[in-house]
Length: 236
Image 1 (cartoon, rainbow, N blue to C red):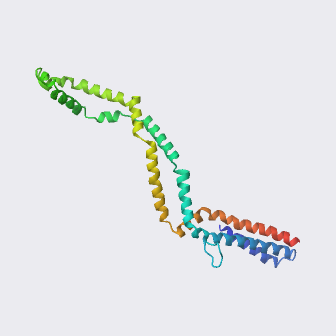
Image 2 (image 1 turned 60 degrees about the vertical axis):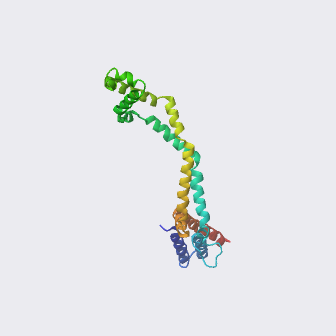
Image 3 (image 1 turned 90 degrees about the horizontal axis):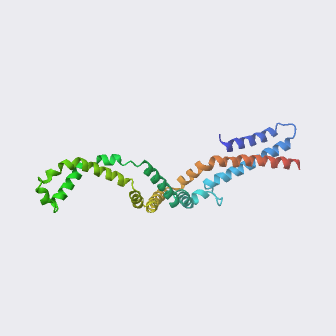
C-alpha cells in the first residue's frame, strides 16, 4: 500500500466533502487543506532526497553525495563487523573447536609404515652397524622386528600428537593475528572494489530499498499534523 498516495487522496476527499457538508464546512475544508499541504510538503521532501528537482537547491542529495555514502558503507562494514578483534575472536573460536574435534587416528592409519620401516633398515645398513648386520644374515635378519617396530612407531606418533608441546606448536604455527590482518586486507579490497562499481543510481536504489517504506510515514504524519493544525486554525 502506497502510504503517500492514500494520505493525499484522503486529504483531497476531505476537501471535496467540505463542499457538500451543510455543517462545519469551513472547519472541514481547513482540515483537508492543511492535511493536504502537510502531506504534499513531506512527499516533496522525501522525493527531493532521491531525485534532483530543477530550481530547488539541495534536492537529489543522495545521488549528489553518493561518494560519501559509499565511504560510509565501507566504514560501517570494516569498522563495525570486520574488525581485527572480531576476526581474531572468530579464528580463535574455530581453532579451539577444531582442536576439540581433532582426531589423528585417520591420519596415522594412512601412513605407510612399511616405507618407514624400510627407511629405518636402510639407515642401519648404511651406518657403521651395517657390517655387523651382514654377519648375522644381513637386513633380512631385521624382518621379524617389522611388525613390533611399526606398532611402536604408530603408538609413539599418537602420543606425540596428544602432547602439550605438539599442541603448542600448532598454536604457534597458526598466527591468528597475522591471518586476521591478511583477511581484513582481502575483505577491504573486495568491499572497495565492489563499491567502486556502484553508480549514483545504484546507491540511490539501495538506500531507497532500505528506508523508503519508512519514509512513507513522514507523509502520513505530515497529513495528520496538518489536519490538526487546520482544525485549530479553523477555530480561531
